[in-house]
Length: 446
Image (cartoon, helix red, strand yellow):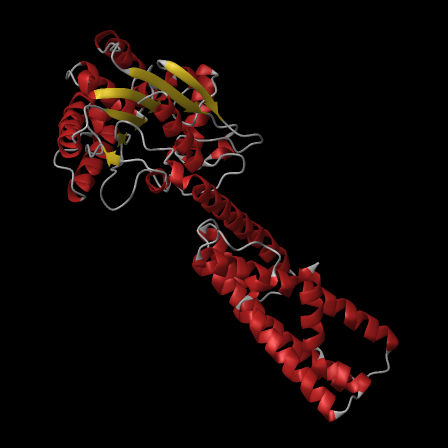
């Protein structure tokens, strides 16, 4: 209701030439109305979020400004449509000079375009959920009539959802912050998967660690190199485990490992005798039974191409800080054949809690390249539900905590489980998923 009143009032203010021509009020009345209208107009253009009915208590300054951008663009869209209706009516009435109508419309257009430009700038600068492609379209075509209203309506919806999600997270944090629900008995070691690093340039785990720390968790990272054979990554992890325990004085730690990181962790626990120092291992989308697509690619692709890709990768990641990256060692350890021997050698240890989680994509459109391609390969070869890289059956190890998915075509991909693209997914809040995961470890005494 407040939005309707605000839009209607601003339309009236921006048509002051027309109303002055029709009503011809006294100068004193006109001046008072103009001053009041100008004040409200600039108040709305500067702090549009204050005119909404939304509770702003749990919004950060960025979210308030972004929500204000949504309000500016919404009022622009509805106001422009009201103006069109008004001019259609005036066209049929036909008693007003065209000079008055043109002059009035130009003033209205300038004032409302000022609101639109402000809203566009806010969304371009402040939204993290509107994708770059859409931002480019908005930046280039915001001025095109009708198209801009249609397109702005679509991306404004994305920005509003972003504000709602962040506000909801902040509200939940405020309610649970005193309970330290993620303050486990043992510190948390988060272990990354293959082809990524977790401690330099880019946080592998997205917004997840910050949320865990807010709720009391003590978070550390695996810091193993981006691509190595499981044995080598396991050695790096064992060194990191000893360093964390020495630093914290803790007896043990809990490991949360994604993808190949789960295999690296299992190797360190069993083969490198880390099991007295590890309380639990929770694997996220880990290929415990291997990835058939890895076998196929290694067999089908010409050796020259595979070797060139490996050399390029190793050279690039050396420049990024890895001392001895091994692309082929990492990929070969993900095959089904290698996992058969691995699982025979690397047995679960009774002192450690093993549990696992898997997600699944619902269609190739759940993710971009290369996951949309590997999703199709797994579906064709194994006819199994998968996350774009790992079949669900391959991801089950120890106590299985269940499949993670959402309704519709979106699904949850391999990358979504580590907040790779920092994307808010309808029906799945990745930060709360990990908060619940750590909370459960705490409740189990870990």
